[in-house]
Every structure is written in structure tokens, then in C-alpha cells.
Length: 268
Image (tube, rainbow, N blue to C red; front, side):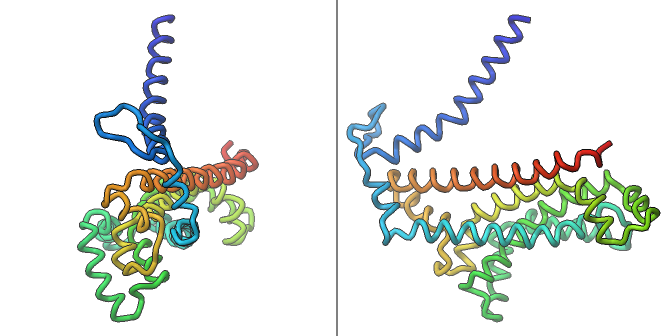
């Protein structure tokens, strides 16, 4: 028993080190002024990176706000599509269902550049290129497969027995969905929402392609600093990118988890 506890604690410590160490490296880099490749620690510390990040001309805060706005809109719209689509694939049998399931996964299976270039031509034709609306639409094609698969699995396990029981008790469609089905969907809403938000929030190539450099999200702003080798500014932007995504994920999880606790009697 003692050896198992020691082994367990050792695993926990190793996992903490693996997850925390990269953040510490980014933090040190963001405050470094000079860090030669042959030195274990920076030779000089400074605030050049953070001074640039919070300066008005850096556009970091505006790009962060735009990233959050686009990702929230993409996640919300995708959720409205994924729930009924997941129900259709998870419960009902219809002609061509296997083909539809393959088409749903097509944006993941087919290389992103192929999907992006084809859609870009169509967006140029209809005036959606270089616009926020175009970026939202192209990101929907990427996040929808994840959400649809999650809700299809939930509905496949849930079945129709609860909704049928609600109909027996004279509940209409919206009452059945709100008071019976929706509580079962809360765990899926959390997992699908967090996954789709992260995929949207971290999207660079499609955002840059469809946005044409005019829709500047945080990944679009971050990539040039990573590519140019400016690790000081890139580290600071990376920390903001990670922390903002993490904070929003915690808020989403806590909000929906509270709803699950309030409706846990449905799981009896």
C-alpha cells in the first residue's frame, strides 16, 4: 500500500512538472531581455514584451476581443446545429445515413488547405472573403463535425424513451426538450462547447485565408512573432492566448455544471 501511494504521488508530480514547466518557460521568456542559447537562465530581464503587448498600437486587446467574439458566436451557432443533427444521426435510421456520417467528418478527413481554398473561391464570388461573417462560416465547417459526433453518441445512448414518456404525460415538444432532454445533454454541451471553442479560438490558417489579413484574431497576430523568432513577444502573446482560453473554459464548465447539479434528479 505504501509503495502504491508513493508511486501514485510520483506520477502526479511528474504530470504537474510536464504541464507546468512549459508555462514557466513561457513566463520567463516573456520577461527576458537577453537569453543566449548556451545559458540556462536569461542574462537580463526586462519588460519589452509586455510593454509592446499593452501598447495601443500593438492591437493585442482588440484582436483578443475579436477572437473571443468569433469563437463564442461560432460555438453558439454550431450548438444550435449540432443538437438536432446529432439527434438525427444518433436515433433515426434513414436512406443514405452512412453517406451523411462520412460527409459530416469530411472537413476533418480532407486536408484543411483543400477545404479552405475551395471555399475561398466561393466566398470571393459572394463577397464573404475578408469579412468576419466569412471567418465565422469557415470556422463552422471545422467545428461542426466534433459537436455532431458528440451529440450523436449522446442521443444514441439516450434513445427516445424519456421523450416518449414526456409525451405520455402531455408535454409538448418544447417542454419535453427543456425539462427532459436538455438536462441529459448538459455534459455533452460542456464537452462539445469547450472543444468547439478551442478549435475555433486556435484557428489560424483558415482565419488568415478567408479573413485576408483584415480580420486579425489573436492567432493571426501571434504567428508572425513566432515565425520571426521574437520569442519575448511571442511568449507573452502565448500566455494571453492560453490563459484567456482557460478562463473561458472554466466559466463555461462551472456554469453548465451548476445546471447539472440543479437537475440531477433526472438521472435517477
